[in-house]
Length: 489
Image: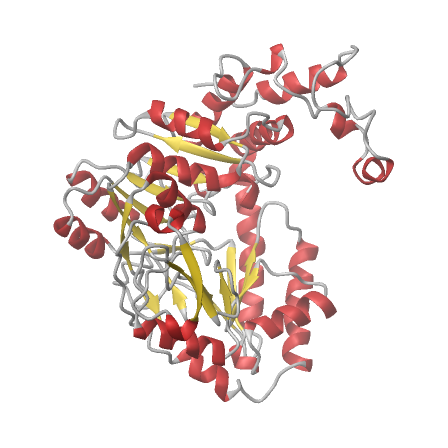
């Protein structure tokens, strides 16, 4: 057992920031002396004294032998991994590295369609061929859950030469699928299970939270420590266990994807966040769960509102656990869309959600929230229900809820080939049967309808036109109004 009270990287950074010397190395602001006054007024100069580069005592992120190596070893033990890498380019580079380390050009990887855009970037960078699975979908709530074990097993039977399976655990809504079953199936084929656990870094520190991905059998998981724990924005970790992942390939991939001038402020924040959770994690998560339960209980009693809970009936393989620190409130009972409710709460009631969708608002309740925050959240919803309620949703929005989401997909080129191919932009009506050269992702529910390399079909065009007519938001593509699409020339 390592001494989890230690913070070797943080201590080294603190010592070097306090050491009197004449700096003739990057960064150019030289311990804050060259920082502009407005920025110094906002942040103070102390933070810039610690904004240092790879000095002798601070180790090297790409070949760690000193304090970074010690900090990563402590993190590996705390999070249940055999090896951990610190990430300063967010979980994005971790997901990309995971794909690059397991797949090459033409290799197959199974993954859900509701993956983060970083997974699509990983496909483009690696040249891998995606075998997409549709996640389990709740048409009433308009929420995509997890892919199911049966879907993974069926895909592996059809594609036994697959090199890896990647899944999202938990989803943005805090929903967890049956990861243990998926791991068992994947390992029967002796291939690694990669997990985008960006929103689950806290799972390892309290028994009332869902099972951590590594404990459920994942071979590799990527966690955004900044999203739900105490690290600075962009600071994440990649964890590996077992022997199905080539750790040297992970290191080499990260050298391609991470900055050669990593921020030691971000690295030290990972060291500090790990120590905080290793020493006090259960207490901090107990308090966080208590605050979340207060919010959940009180908001669910407000007329016109409901909160996302575990399904009352068992047997939903795409929804076997829920992160109770993630609060999703359905507001359609107030006659409001999630977007309208979000705007009112943010601009008039001083409550800001993590994100809004057509029917819902989702809130991250973390170790940084206070009882005062919860009170303001509850009072905000109380006022929303009392003063901004309408009779019902408009007909236009009701139609959205009943859209037929059965679409035709066909991959003609790999995402890499399509991304780098010569392309042209055509009016939407002229793109039928052409090969898409960009990502087209309606929001909600945030599942890509088209990706580079897929054939544009009549059903997809009709769906996009319906979304346009309803004022939906499209992300990823060049023309967010979707009056035109980029296609392979």
